[in-house]
Structures are given as structure tokens and as C-alpha cells.
Image (cartoon, rainbow, N blue to C red; front, side):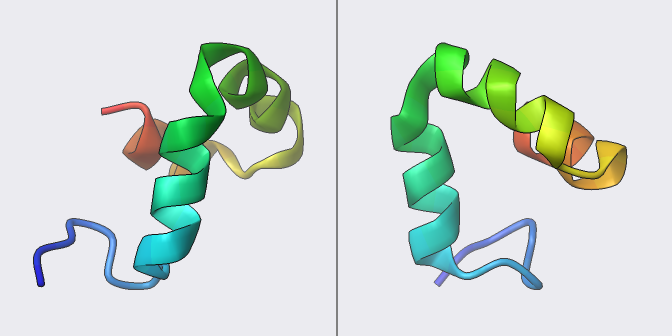
Length: 41
């Protein structure tokens, strides 16, 4: 089990990744900058 963001469940990371760039752009408005910066790497 590999994860650079252990405080986030794998299913949540998968969901965010599957959402695609458009959803990610919208989510940036609702997500803390720290979490977003980690996700977009």
C-alpha cells in the first residue's frame, strides 16, 4: 500500500483522480490549498 498522502483514504484519492481536470478545477475552490497542492503533484 503506497500513498504519499496517508491522511486521505485511497478511495478518496482515486475519486479525485478519476474526476479529471475539470472537477479538480472546481474542487480547488472548495479544498484547502494544502490538500490541493498535494493532489495536483
